[in-house]
Each structure stands twice: as C-alpha cells, then as structure tokens.
Amino acid sequence: SQFWAVRGAEAQAGYPKGIRTLGFPASVGKIDAAFSDKEKKKTYFFVGDKYWR
Image 1: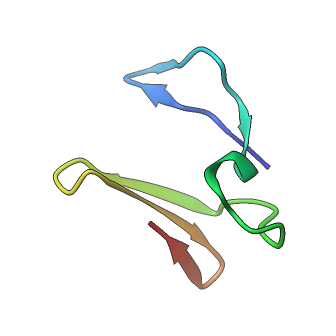
Image 2: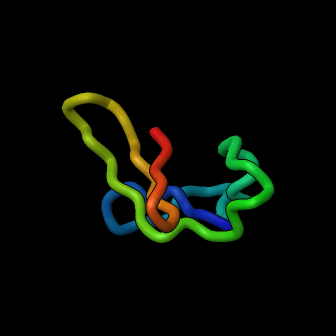
C-alpha cells in the first residue's frame, strides 16, 4: 500500500507514500511490479493482469 522513490541506491526523502497518491483506485491494495522506461519517460505499474502507465 506504499511506495518509495529510489535514485541509484538511495531512497528519496519524503517516502514512503501511499499508492493512492499516484491515483490508483481503491480496489488496488498493492502493486505487483513496476518498470520505468527512461527513453519514453514512462513508468508502468502492474497489478494482477492489469497495468497502468
């Protein structure tokens, strides 16, 4: 139900934060995986068989 922002090997100040701050619906209790595409400047979050960008 929370996430951290990490740069290199260090967690950023002000974290963890609740996943609701990212705009996830109340039905999402946890994120299974996340992937950041630096080239496209997009982050993908995976929950079960769904994903958000």
